[in-house]
Image (cartoon, rainbow, N blue to C red; front, side, top):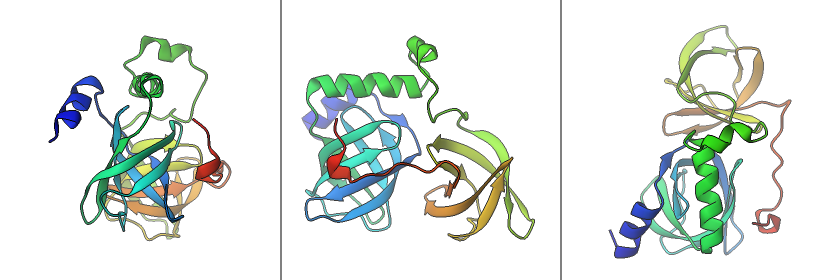
Length: 195
């Protein structure tokens, strides 16, 4: 671990947060990834084909915002990005993460956001053939629910969680992402999203 990484770790605590993100590389490749953890100084992401170490990216994280940075670590299925944000943006991000993580007393005064389901809430995932699987809600973002569930239903499978119906849109390290069609996420071009 470098000196700057050690300083960042002390100054900006990381939170475990399994939500969806999108990233755009310098050469125009756009892809989805799953956040494993995030701080105001960086992020760890899981995806099938991580870009190479040193790649500069624009990242958009559901309900948190847009970031620019460079890949500082990479494995077969994950990568870590150090943000190039200015200090003011880092402070705003740290505050937002505290609100999401429930450690900011002012969070109760915030307007309702996508994070309305408690993490680790146990529930059931009903498959199209009527079979039910025990699962945990990892996070809820606009238009999508991330579940911890094994075995993973196939991508494209129609499923029901409580009163919500959706489709398995992706697999991640701990389960699946389920897209809820009645509440679609508003993805624009990542390059056009401002800080």
